[in-house]
Image 1 (spheres, rainbow, N blue to C red):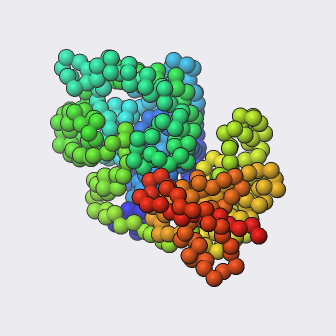
Image 2: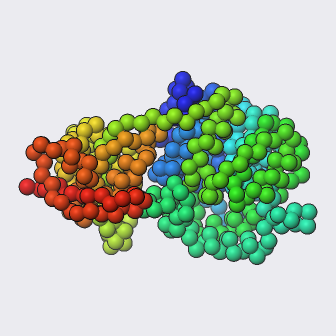
Image 3: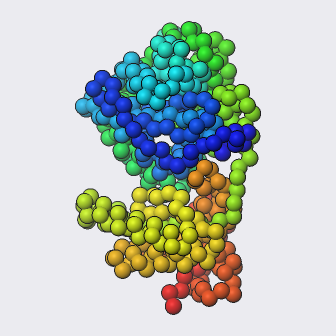
Length: 451
């Protein structure tokens, strides 16, 4: 949570997806937090439900919700909202109508808009059409126009747009999406989660067609001079010329530079940017003091889940996942563990003591083994950063890597766990030193002895 705003009560559970109808189409939206301002955050393609499985995106949203009533939505044609036929894409005017319908549904009379990517021109058009409904505007990783023109020399050439769109199609729905983003790179669990999100948001063909159209056709430069609401433009290196243009054309706009290397802010460590956004929108300084707690972290996942899904089919696999989830949650409750989140075919949980974590994890693996569900798990203890109801930090990263090193049916623990349980009745088998990806030095890992 952003310090300086901790006197605001925040609902940090995963929000409920609701629907509103516009133009005979159903749009999905969510609301989280109950801060003093309404804030719409939108960056185009997404999936409201699956975004909460991507830890970095969930943490980003919850930080916004720590100082606002955060409003999220899937525009028509994407994510949890009603789909359009192939080749159809909403116009800026239709997209604007989607946003207006969502604001009406949540009874927001005036909201701040925080947008990225292709949602930028939509927000600019919304401010022009409905200035009374907007209290402030934050534009990040976006432009008033993306394509080159004689009076817009910094725009992208048609050749660049074609190459970019083709490259996007080739990685859409795969773990290559976000593979270079610092907050996700090197974490197979999170890369899987982001890949699932993109597949649910749109097909590769839909994404390619949409972005070709956006990058070639969107044009709202003539509206910039009429923007009268406080505006903050966030400049990233890749789109710096676009940001400079926006800041110079919008009256009294503020320009904030960041060195983010991802195409969306949640893909990098942008805590300072979030603090600046909070300060800009609320008028209050927001420091970055994170809440930390010593916890034992457990990661579990079903071994060879992709192969099993392929062999069994969606219906049988879904039934197996349901049984798996019920079993894990029953054991977490019995051993006083706390579920942090699911990862599609696994769980992340925390415990106050390493003994409870190890006993619970071993019981889970054994129970699922009897159900012919092969699971592997990793356990590590350390100080974790608390981000709403999510956790982050090196200890979490190490726990995930320990789980990744485990064999099917095996519970691996770190040297830290063994040291903490010295003198107990637990027995561990030394599995030697392992190089854990993203961890600077080798770690000694141990398997729980099933004796």
